[in-house]
Length: 458
Image 1 (cartoon, rainbow, N blue to C red):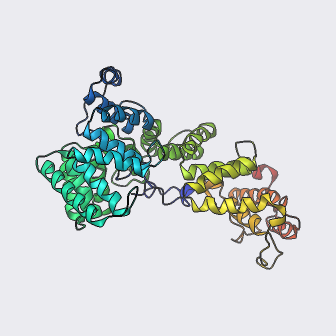
Image 2 (cartoon, rainbow, N blue to C red):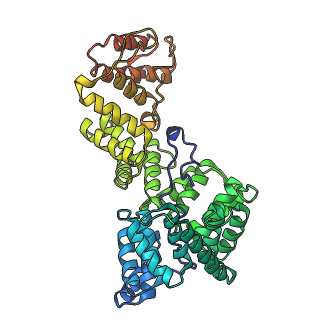
Image 3 (cartoon, rainbow, N blue to C red):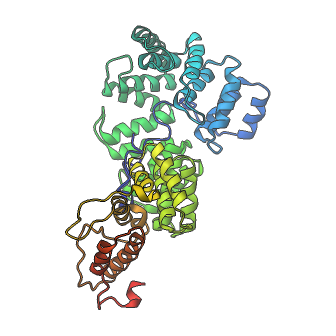
């Protein structure tokens, strides 16, 4: 599910299509959540206690009772897997499969799924079937995939009917996605509900999402919020993020920016990169918290360092404009590249423009724009980006795009600020042009009128 789809922040209107940090393909968390004592678990795990090793790995993976740490989770799953624990072997396979905390490796995923499958793990059989179906890490084999899906479903259904939440959750997932069986969203909702009622935090969140979207069940945002809250109360960082979005938008609960910030911060403190990004933006905006651009930058960097694509794009824009950081086109280019590599199309466009700007001879010219003069393609793109992207909007500066007419007879403070801000940006664009008649005309169009005093436009 899209983790930013709830947000109606004006300064995030350009943000879309962010995927969850951990989506459906994750090791199910422990089905019950007693208070987690990391020190005690660590001591037991160090003695070779397999159950403690698995519990400790789960705690690190989900950030329950400690900071989320995929590397430590991997290490403890590996220790338990070496002692032939089927669930740990399955979890290792899934970590390799999805690339959580280490490079994606289908062959290693195949190996560990295989070991768990040989011990009868329905979870592993289903994931192994997926590899054969897609031909990842092994030659594509539909007959083998069908056999494994069937065996896995039977094993999981047996456990699900015995009220094992983890199995119920997986059965729900199979119905939801049509993995080896006919897709049935209604059946998926029913099984997620069963697991959720038994305390499985992942199922609680998934059932909440189905309620919110009206998938397989009638839409009910109030009931959805209840399940998000239950999952969040168990310490699940992603669920805490969802609670934050609900409070921010007032969906299923009374709108409350301070509570939204509180829940986003809980998620961020558990190393959730999307939570860190939104905390950053709320600090910049001063929404639900006292405005603090230093804190905003700090959390933005944390999110960017965790490959949060929108954070990387925004950080690149900051370096490009020198807004709150030393202006550094090379660093901007690096962050745009990282964001683009993480699938951000807008960053890819910015990267292409930056490449052209870095090569003077390769600059391209566009046709005339609005009857003025020619302007180089990359400069136009970047200039328009400055004016429309959230970099300035989330800082409370309501700057108009050059493509939207601005009245010259301005009288209000906001309009005066728009004119002044546009003029400043145009001066930056002017420095990038050899032939700057177009920019000169634009600067004249955004002139500061007599109604705008020096005091007003500062």
